[in-house]
Length: 373
Image (cartoon, rainbow, N blue to C red; front, side, top):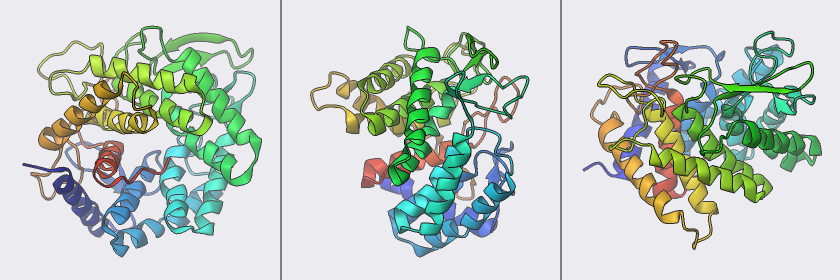
């Protein structure tokens, strides 16, 4: 029987294996049960560095610490040259690299990089709409008025910057964006839109929609998972009870719509057939969100039992049926993740963010080690 510790040991061994096989390289999304290893120029590289920090904190192996630290100059250079940073995923990149390094080691160099990244994310605030623009430059004809639910997981970088500097502007835009997400992305039945559009000139709200989900009115499972964890984190930083309630409502919906094996398909509204893709990464993210909720909720909260049962059912299923513990040379930790099914981009493969959240959930459950949000 695979235990939490067995799963952690296997995951850490695979992190070490990847570092050795691909020195100085970072994983990109690809197909064929492997990662494409390349430069620091996508939105996902922080997850790999975050896995190194989790491996270090779990094993106390200096190898992982040294490997993670070796990438800080690359993340600094990326800021200096503004390499592929016209998006809100700056939080994904720098919370799990620079903030994590500062949290674990106290590195002032890492703190400085993280604060510079927070300022870059701040520059994406659009006051006339009251949102952080998701993608593209400010005058982007397609994305100039777009927000997406993923951004909730990038807000901790801004909250952290406020705590470090006392500059109210970081807290204010993070809080306002979370409030806008609550108003425009969360539907009355506890489901969620992936994205919402505004008129960038007038700031008027236009419509909800999707980019990676099945259709505009459906519920993309990874988006729902981002919402569970993201709103819980917003509550952690602000203590606004409305954010906690929203996280709980999204979690209830997610749990109620899971299939029998407790691991999500890629969209809650897509027709389920034999070859319908799963998204194991959505369930890994949701597990981390449930762990955050369980830490924040009062002992007498009526949802505790539901969330605890769902967490263990999902993680047991991931470990036993989706993890690569039976594939020693696998580059990824979780099988059957999906990136962009509708766009036919990696609909069934390893996803580095799925690997990160899976490991975060494991070490939080077994060792009490949190992620770096």
